[in-house]
Image (cartoon, rainbow, N blue to C red):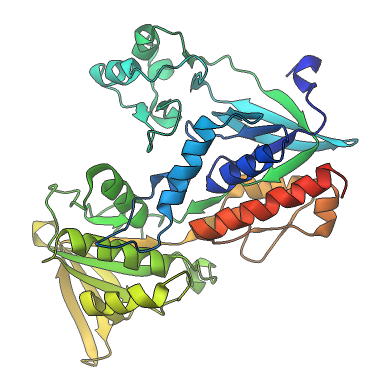
Length: 421
């Protein structure tokens, strides 16, 4: 564990747990207020899920707000305020000790030192050349280090081989060791921005996800759009001609015990579909939906556009089967034709809901936060009086703009607590 010197911090330090758009925005706001901030991110990169979102603009802006994430990342990189960021830092415990919090951090056994890394890319080349895929690059050029290690894919220790990335790194920035120890940090306040977890259908599931190669989630589609500028079928890398979006996967489903609406999915998938059809005008897109939730700025405008360019079917399909040429046969009831129809699609995109972050929930409960019936954290006035603030999707589904606004609210609440207002 950490020594006493590691627990000696500035008087008004704020610990932010989570480096997504909410945590970054709160950190920037508090930095502008002159507060000392330590941001702890468990993964190799800051930015969270939002950093992987592609711009959905067609011939005009669709107000997806994904560009706001890039702006926040740029500000963090250029930031001169007292903001310290620790990647690969998983928070495993939070305790109140007098007027301060002591946070226990478990570092990853594989990491890249952001102070030493020069973003040269030698580690990525060495990893790929050795037949491994553990080194990856960040989703944005505004993230430093630009390269990171995916712990779940690094097999050097288990295979007993010398990591090629370490010998390739001239700066000595890479650590891969099974001898890492937890450490502790201290702060006057804790801002919990632990975010959400995208729902992932468990196998077996009726969608064929994980079994049929051309059934993917919106999260996977995001990565394709951001990295390749288009959507392709995983089975053969072809551009699909006929695509189905299936809404409310993992939301509003009593059988799964997930009856809440994830709110942001309707607008999100419609923007994505409009972007896809703008790129490939002859693409046929069908959206299977239960209801359309009209949240967000200018929703009516692009919803009307979607109804003109997309085929909207008010029905959630019942069955999905593999078909010839890796197509998916989708069975659904047509209200228009008053009968069950089976229709083949080249690609099916599951619009997955937002799930509570279980690790964040456990940390919240440890410091006295309540959990609502859907599994998200609820913070009250008493928590704020103790120096605990919750922000963003740790409280429930929000879009990027809502997360940014809520982060600013949380930063102001923390400022008032620190200053005793």
